[in-house]
Length: 202
Ligand code: 0O2
Ligand code: 0O2
Image (cartoon, rainbow, N blue to C red; front, top):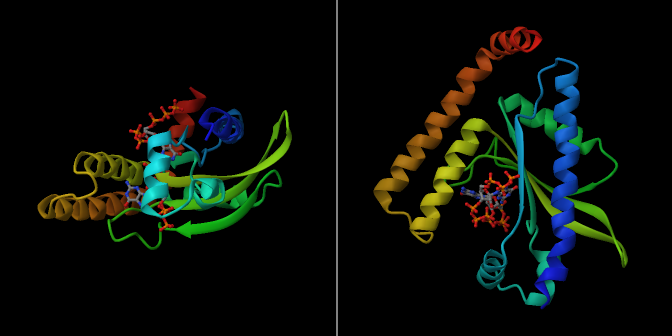
């Protein structure tokens, strides 16, 4: 398997999606409107992670491009829960990509406590061999959800997927606290936005 040539178009997908999503952020900023996007990150899944996922899901190497949906991953982080749905609507309305699957772990959290909205998209990239349609995953979540997921991800890494029971309980509690934080912030959303508008004008 030539990883360099296989992954190069995925890197292009990540870069293009980041540019486009950052463009949305900039447009809101230029109009002094609250941007539903706080920041964007992205990455191409590292080869060892691809191999690990393929092995655990019993995916043969020749099928990874159609079976592993997050080789190209872009993450959109928002201030408020409402913003997640605004971003989802904006992506649904675009005609430069096709949504192939939606996973709403915002209204229905995963057993771990994980919350996020996932869109699996098909995205066309131009290569020197012609157009290629690749799968990519867009994760949309609030700052609080991101804080939780980042810490839980680190712990999973540290404990190789088997987090001790007492820490799992703490993570469940932390997930609930993050949820409460999002709920409370939503209630004062308009106050916060007004303050940010005034600050931005200055
Ligand atoms: P692992 O498990 O080895 O991936 P940037 O340069 O800021 O644009 P960067 O540096 O890739 O992008 O992002 P950041 O925020 O430093 O990444 C922190 C961790 O989140 C990294 O994991 C990234 O791989 C991961 N990450 C970032 N964006 C995404 C995304 O859209 N989807 C997924 N699934 N992961 C993402 P680690 O710690 O290297 O671990
Ligand atoms: P990484 O290191 O982020 O690249 P499925 O077949 O749908 O059950 P799949 O393909 O894992 O399984 O899809 P799912 O559950 O939608 O998760 C895809 C990605 O969401 C994961 O990528 C994580 O980035 C994130 N994610 C899902 N569940 C959790 C969770 O409990 N905690 C954290 N921190 N992140 C989660 P990868 O490939 O697992 O890893």
